[in-house]
Length: 395
Image (tube, rainbow, N blue to C red; front, side, top):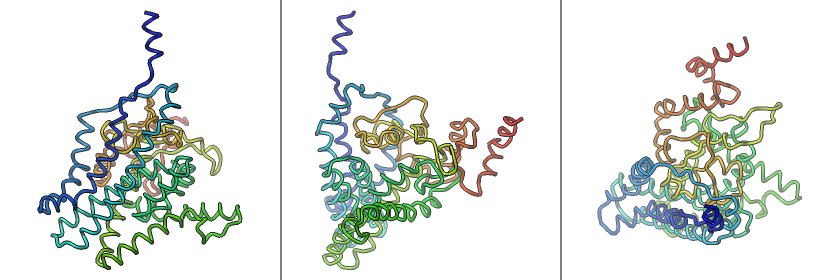
């Protein structure tokens, strides 16, 4: 028995998901393939296929395949993170997603199609570009110059390059507090959240970068500004496309960019819904912990998003690479992967029915751990008996 145990301990760790990560290239590529499918088949209706796969098939696969609760042993993590194969998978996605954006805009601007096919292509290209923002999220957290620049490059097509600053130095600092426009509140719909989150993210990114440049004595309006760097790439790309394709391409560029950015907002909305870090002193909150993020271990959608859904470990350890992110017991768990949860949050009454009770149960009735939408707190406390529980605790 001792010999077998020693042999097992000596055996090198093998990542069983190693080649599954190729799906994080293939599925986004398929999401952006609507124009190619229409060209190959001549049938504009097939433009809806990538949309149906992302919002229909993937949630079903998550339900069928279930959850992955496995973790790499900590002794294997240094070698796992040093393995360049995992970086090459992310690098390979960048040109594919750029091509998806360019081909989709070109096809929409140069081919007559019924309105429903145009809508499908905008949505599918927007989904693909949303995967690109997720890729920028993974790359932007790393310390190598190559990865950080690739993050800016992949965020540029949709004009959301400020996410590179806003997420890393804003959201991670303020997450699950009232100061964070990217943390949603219990009782807040996705639609009111977007109106707060999108402009708030841009303002925070600009303020953070302006402060940084001021401390280093560099001008704000220069290419030292890491908000302006990806914005310059966006301006060049969009200008070249408009010169090439004409002004008729602009609505398609803007539509694809908006839907991609809305996918990011959808992810932000579900990742921290209703969760609140405790305030230790005015404006000062407890350190972010894994239980301040909603987690999902659903297998397929994690394979196609570079483990984005192991979000709890990511917030606790933001530089940890996707292949090393871990599952922890007793964390806030979503009932499906992100794609299924996106559909749920687009229907606010269903979302509230699905998630509000989970927030209350997670907080164990402690209202200091619930992030309420202003104007909704009293109603929600009455609905879930929170005021009565708080009164009972004081007596």
